[in-house]
Length: 240
Image 1 (spheres, one colour):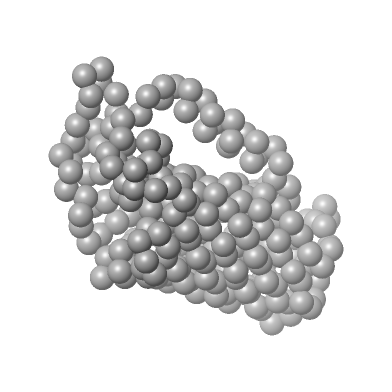
Image 2: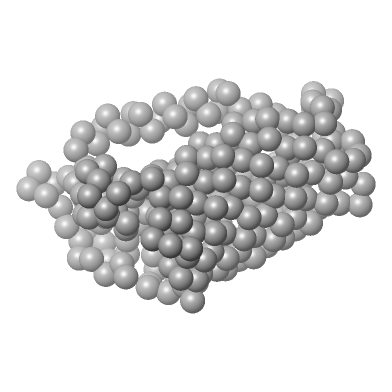
């Protein structure tokens, strides 16, 4: 599945393997890197102190296999989460993800369940050197005193780097807008005095990460999330 041999073009540029399209060579890589950094800085600048819980993504812009799943964990300042996840193929251009688990934020313990639908935006003949997808998500978190629902829309970008290594690596990133709706309780319980106690909260969230294809069946994903606070995450994904 990911057994393509390592390759470089005549100028030593890194080749990006687009899983849903043909193999493509990256031109003008410094400009693309600069653009990627601008996106990150914009996300950090626009993000504000958030109180909503949103599961990590742990997926790239490519479409999943017929079935895959695993475990994930995330941690940051006053935050910890862990759970299980699965993704299922719908058709050549879309897949469905499901996550459930435990989340602790600012002293508040919650149990959550979420789902997302990803749609691949590029055609098979696309000349883009990366994969792109649109993702729609919905999650619900509930604790003893408060419950919250979050809905989001995000743009995914990813591409597999095939360099002088036998293990393909697929960096990915997404920028999304998420709105959380409080159903009951105090949204700022346990958080600092600067917390916004509105019943709904809209925020911009940046996710960035890397998927490491250890084998055809096993993958390791490392992720960072920025939404006014910084959260790190890791997951093990297994192809069924």
